[in-house]
Image (cartoon, rainbow, N blue to C red; front, side, top):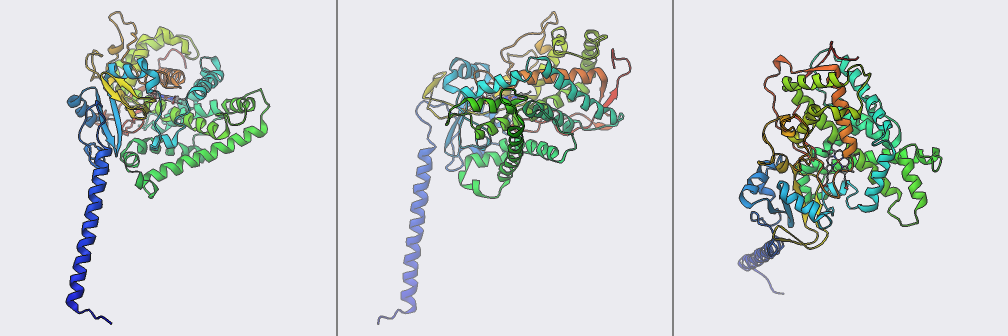
Amino acid sequence: MKSYNREDLSVKDRISSTMFGSMVLFWVVICLLFFLVRTRRPKNFPPGPQPLPIFGNLLQLCLENPMRDLERLRLRYGNVFSLFFGSRPAVILNGTKAIREALVTKASDFAGRPDELLLSHLTQGKAGGDHRRFALMTLRNFGLGKQSMEDRILSEVEHVAAELEESNGKPINPKLLFHNASCDIICSIMYGARYEYNHPFFQAMIKMMAECSKIANGPWGMIYDTIPLLRGLPLPFRKVMNDHSYVKHHVKGIVAEHRASRIPKQPRDVIDNYLDQMDKMEEGSVFDEEQMLATLLDLLFAGTDTTSNTICFAVFYLTTHPDIQERCQREIDHVCDGKERVSFEDKDRMPFMQAVIQESQRFCSTLPLSVYHATTKDTELLGYQIPKGTLVIQNLSSVLYEEGQWKFPHEFNPDNFLNDQGELQKLEAFMPFSVGPRMCLGEGLARMELFLVLVTLLRRFQLVWPEDAGLPDYTPVFGVTQAPRPFNMIFRPRENQSQH
Ligand code: HEM
C-alpha cells in the first residue's frame, strides 16, 4: 500500500485549494459577465447611470426616500431615463410632456401592470379591462355621483367631528382619526357596514395598511423588488405579506356572510353586486371569488391611506396658513349660510376652497411615484425604444412641482389654480390621480370625500397651530402614499359659524 508523507499531503492540499480557488474565481467571473450582459441597456434605450451586477442601481438611490436622487438623475439624463432594479430595467418618466405622451397618446402601449414586484404581489395587478369597468360601475351604483354616497360621507364626518369635540381644544394628532373615517367610508360601500373606531380588528387593519404603504416603496420593498433570492427570508416584507393575508382572511369571512344572507339580484353593496355578477358568468371567467377578494382588497388599500393622508396634509397646511384658512371659512360661511349641512354641489360656488384642496393635493403629492406600469408591447417614446414588459415609473411629483407649469411651483399657494378673476382653472399638469386608461378608479369618491370632510371641519372648527409646536416641517414621509410627519394641532370649535 502506498504511504503519503507530510510534505506530499501539503503539496496535494495546496494544489486542491488552488484548484478550488480557481473554480470559485471562474464562476464569479461567469456570474459577473452574466449579470453585466443582463444589465446592458438595449439599443436606443433611455440613458441612465451604470448599474452594478445583482444590485442594478439600488445602491445609487437613497432607499428611505429616493425622490431627490430621481430629481438629480432627471437633471443629468433628461425627462425620460432608465434605472435597473437588479437586472430588471425600468424607465422613469418625468414632467407633463413625457407622462402624457406615454399614458395618454400611447395609452395602450403603456397600460400594463408589472408582475414580480412586492406591490404586484399584493394587488390584483394585471386584471384590467372588464374588471376595471365593473369596479367603476359598482362604485357608481353604490352612490358615486348620487345622494347616498354623500350621505355616507357626511354621516362619517359626524363621527369625526364628535371625536374632535371631545378633544376639548387640547392639541391632538388627527392622523388616525382621518384614517378611520376614510377606511369606514370604503367599508360601508363594500359591505354595507362601518366599524366603531376602537374595534380591535379595525384598529389592526388601519395599522397594517399604513405599514404596507410605508414598506412597499421603502428600502425593504426595493430590496424585495431587486433581489428575489431574499424573498423567502423573514425580513420586514414578509410582515407586509402576512398583514395582507390577515386582512384578506377577514374580508373572506364577510363574503361568506354575504353569500348566506343575500337575495340574488337585490344587491345591498359591492360584495352582493359582485356575487350577482359571478352568477351571470360562465365557469373560468375572470369574475371568480379569488378575483373578487383581490378587487375588494385593492379598493380597501387604495381608498384608505390615499384620501386620509391627503386630508391630513390639507389640515396641516391650513393650520399653518391661518390667512388661507380664514379666506376658506369666509367663502364657506357665505355659501352655506342657513344650510344645515354642506352638499357636494356647493363646490361650484366655492372656487377658493376647491383651489385650496387641489393645491393641497399638488403640494403633498400623495402618490409620488403613482402605481407602476409596464409596456404591453415593444414601443417608442420621444425617440427612445422601449421593449415589451419594461417597468414604467411615473414620477408624478416631477409634474406637480414642474417649473413652467405653476405660478408658484415650490410654495403652498392656492393662486396656482386661480386666474386673475379668482376663477378655478383646469390645468393639464394637475394629475395627482395620474392620467390615461389606468388612472385612479376612485377619483370621484376621493374628490367628494376631500371636499365634504374639509368643508365640514372648517365650518365647525378653527384649526390652530399650538404656540409651543415650533416651526412646521413640511417634508413628507415617503411611501407608496406619502404621509405628513407627526404633528399636533388644536381643533377649536368656532362660535360664529353660519350653522351648527
Ligand atoms: C386623494 C386620493 C387618491 C389619490 C391621490 C389616488 C391616486 C391614484 C393613482 C396615482 C393611481 C395610479 C394610476 C395609474 O396607475 O396610472 C391610483 C390607482 C387606483 N386607485 Fe386611487 N387615489 C386616491 C383615492 C382612491 C380611492 C378613494 C379609491 C377607491 C375607491 C382608489 C382606488 C384606486 C384603484 C382601485 C386604483 C388602481 C386602478 C387600476 O389598476 O386600474 N383611489 N390612484
